[in-house]
Length: 131
View (cartoon, rainbow, N blue to C red):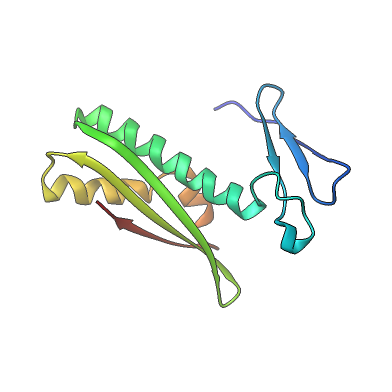
């Protein structure tokens, strides 16, 4: 796996940060209610985005390897703070003709994505299959 070097530069606005890896760029910020300009994802939003992207990619790799046909794979993460702990609720949806056993396996594989493994000792993550 290639190492990433991430650069984050604070802009003139209070909390607006330009983030890049030399090839890709994104913006992080805080909402206006917290003194930011609301020009990009919050840091927790970036974390939730990383979980959603990693889960989606992991499930696609797994189902491709198993030659299981799924369509319209979507992963939605909702962030909240419960008792001072970050809680990410993940909702997974897809269309398929798979049986219950295969669908249960897909949900177990979601917990094996690298970002989930990194976050789960300190961040509460719940997963739900939605239609």
